[in-house]
Length: 198
Image (cartoon, rainbow, N blue to C red; front, side, top):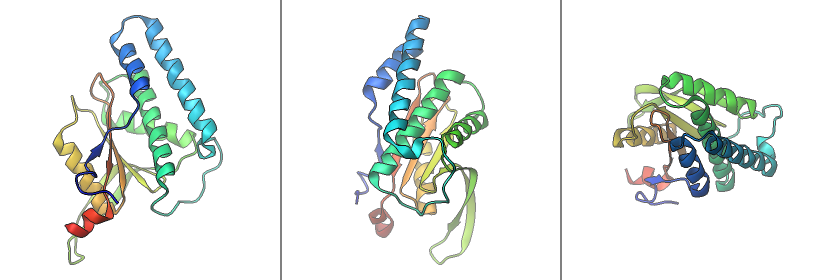
């Protein structure tokens, strides 16, 4: 289990891929953009080849909450790559709903179970329903994805995703910002120990 400090945010390690993407984003040379897209396509093909879950096949029934760390990591990698591909193709400047629809569409095409605007209820300590909210995406019933179109990610966005994870009693979440010229993604983990301490 992760401690509260460890559960804060975990940056996703993709340095070589992101360097190529950053070069493509800042360069006016179309060859740099093509090179980044080819790298992304090859990386995605390797991900699909290594993980049979990512290949196109009929959807399986909803999985129980949880999953192994390897499965979660592969799922996060697939969502990250798909989101980046969307950012490269559409750029920044659209409404959040455009990116939500694009991400949901592409992940469904990849055979994943994706729920858009999934309702999650918030209860008080005595069990009284005190409110609810809509998570942008719930993927495979184990990963909450919150999308933003802001200039940059802020502490309020991080607090929001952590609150969603706590309320939904899920451990893993991604916060993705499509609003900046530079692609931003952060992974969050809410552990059982954090719930017990509160």
